[in-house]
Image 1: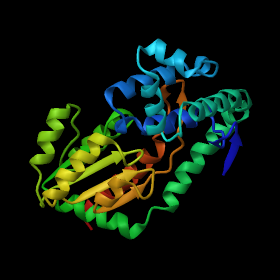
Image 2: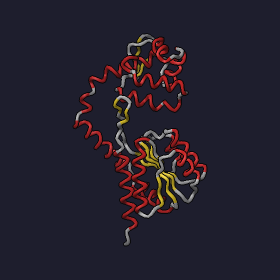
Image 3: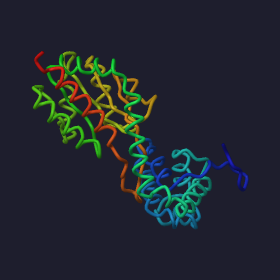
Image 4: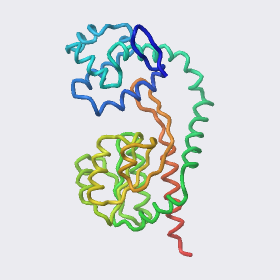
Amino acid sequence: MYNYKKGFKVRDWMSTEGLIALLEKKRNHLSKIENQVLDYILTHMTEISSQTIYEVAQALFVSTATISRTAKHLGYRGFQELKYAIVQSVQSESTESDSRSFQAITQQLIANVQDSFQQMDEAKVAEMLKMIERANTIEVFGVGGSFPICTDFARKLTFLGKKAYARSDWDEQEAAVKNLDGQDLAIFVSYTGETKGILAYARVAQEQQVPMISLISTKGSTLEKLSTTTLFAKGTTRYHQRVDLSSRIAVICLFDTVLLMYAEAKQPR
């Protein structure tokens, strides 16, 4: 749905957290200078509400055309539409306190976990267990807030008798995925399913016919299309200013379920 203001179309307002998350998702599609413009926008949202395009350009020592181009690459018709979205999100900030109460936050986390389990197909999990069991080597890939979860999963798989690794170094990750083949397994964790580095590794794995499992929050993503099988971990995007506070608890629950079922399957009968 669109509202009209001053002759241009403007999207319905969203929270500051939602707007930041939306803009951050566009970052990989921006040039270096456009990323600098985005950084300025995200750190000066309140000020931008009252600034003109000329003032923003002057503050960044760039042309107004660069500001306009960045706004368009972020999904807006121009700076004015982007500015209006920022104004609306800033104004809505004062009305969001109820959604941040203890009860609201805990209920949302519980709902995310429940939704994730409801989408968890037992036959799909059984297929994943077979993929884990058959794999000679398992590499688990994740970045940012997802990486500690990958490390924990790989560590537990190691204790269960598998050769499993989660590597923090980008060069090491690249080398690791290139060493995989059809007898191994690659597991990817990406909140959006569009993380640039993760997609690069997934494409290498696909070219080498490596079986792939992905855990993502967004259906229809590029990572889902590349993967052999996928689990969906429901998540709610949360940002405090520019700090990503999005909970990964649903991912942890799904991983733990797979681990417990794998451990149970290995028990002697």
